[in-house]
Image (tube, rainbow, N blue to C red; front, side):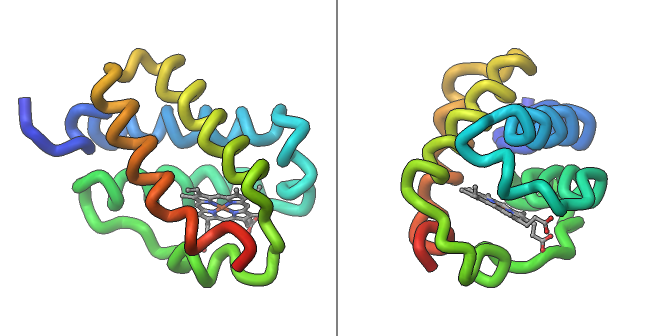
Length: 119
Ligand code: HEM
């Protein structure tokens, strides 16, 4: 199997399923669900999927904003950031992603913290 995290997540299909589950988890997560009250959920799922695909070494399909621009002025707290990481781990587990791959995704997400929390 290829070394690319994208391939190890199951390519387009796998990454898309994970990203859609992640958004579904956000909508059920009381710590952050209200943040998405006015969101177009299909568009948000597409943004999450294309971001995960492009960010893990797949095709360059993400057309959204960079993380600083996407979250600037939202006053996102460290607890909210943790809630997103929790939701990501649940989505990865549900899709039977391996321990090592879960760690790689978690690290990649964590490394974006300074562009998202209180920016
Ligand atoms: C590493 C963590 C995170 C990543 C990778 C991430 C990723 C993204 C992406 C890709 C978008 C779409 C941007 C676009 O379409 O231009 C987005 C939008 C958004 N994010 Fe995040 N995000 C993270 C953390 C958070 C946190 C902690 C919150 C607050 C609970 C949050 C709230 C939002 C909101 C409210 C939007 C706009 C949704 C909309 O336009 O309907 N994000 N995020």
